[in-house]
Image (cartoon, rainbow, N blue to C red):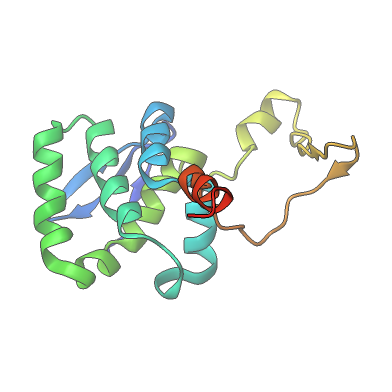
Length: 171
């Protein structure tokens, strides 16, 4: 797997990739692009990678698109980032994917949480006089409070309107 990465306060992750030390950064616009292209959010990706790792239900696009957008987010030209990902991940097949899963995790966490040594909400707690931020709870449609599960729920496939139309018409 990839070597140790260093993170900074602004989500910059510096790690070895493709035989050189490179910078990766996923700011909110790049996290949104990643989410659009993979169909899942960064929280789901990190939860899957944390809980089940290499043997889990991760997708090829999680690896290739995270590394691509991380490189672009840190200032690399898209053509150069694409070439690096093709050479050091895609052209190496399954081994290229698996060897970069740890780096993918570090890049996403850098974008979402900041560096590993800073826990989520730490700066918010300092701003609030040392108190940690209140947890946010979702409200169910009935208005009752619902806490989120610790196990990620996989994304549901979009319904196919052509199937329901065809089935309804007896075709």
